[in-house]
Image (cartoon, rainbow, N blue to C red):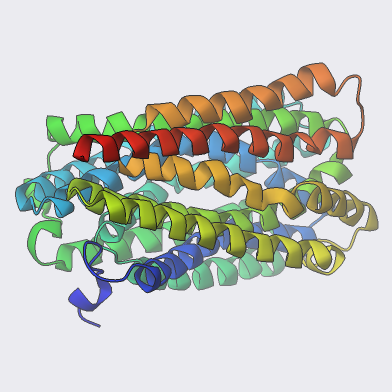
Length: 450
């Protein structure tokens, strides 16, 4: 397949099919990345123990907390590249590619060192049960050894996605996913390594995906080509990336912090509740990545059209992405919840664990489509260069509410199902605020143009 055939003209012609063609591989890519963790959870749950399942699953909020800042910065890179492409600024594209590449390496090494250092303290702060603590710490430290490669892939994929190329990152993740699955089975079943086996398998898969994305970027033609001898950080591009990416990353970090607080409350219900929640949350991630795909489409398409001053197309892009997100996410939510015991059985055969997992799926997963309201609206604002406002609103509407719920409401409204009700409530509140902010922004843009 030629390089040009993987790229999408976002500035001209019909939008629906282009957005769909862009979003489907992006959703599949995100699902495959989540599959790394899901396979870890399934293998240890089926072939090790429920405690090993709890140890691996309880780390998901911690991992998200630590990596979200840098994932947000990669989102900023996507916006900056898309704006330059919309303006036909090849030199700006070259400077951004150079900056993105070096930032991915530096931030990856930094995050690895931080992750290894804080693994035990942060898990202890979460009141991780003593019977799973050591396994959880071991898994988390080994997982962070592969984080530099994870970030290299994600930053590299952001470069390709800025021109509409979502297929080649997907092909890479297919290969890495197969490697991860095979190594999981071999290391856990044949060598009996348990949590350390699945962590090593994930790290190796991340190395493969990073190597492949670097090879693709080295072979690119024109402004997107990665040139090692010209790699440097350009201040203007870095500032713009950080201006957009840091608020998005901080939002993700605070969002994950609120989930860490909720996870700490879940830990109080014992290892079966932890394992059940860990199994159920995999399906939340699968459905959420439908929203992520629509977010990515909104950022790239709106970024280019905003840069080109095509505000009518910006409005149409938003409506298409929102519709796709709502319909796709709700369909997946309903399917997994309808057959919750069947899907949970892939991760565990323990009836108590399945019981807790089903409670989470019925109380959280079924309503997850509501998150489209603030996620896609926020992505549209970021594509137009406005990152701080949706961050502030999401931090208040989602994160603050969850913390208040855990520390103020839950002690008087006790129960596992009652604890989880905070998720749909926070989605409704946050969505209302960010939707209003998007419409106000669009009204101002149209007024200025007139």
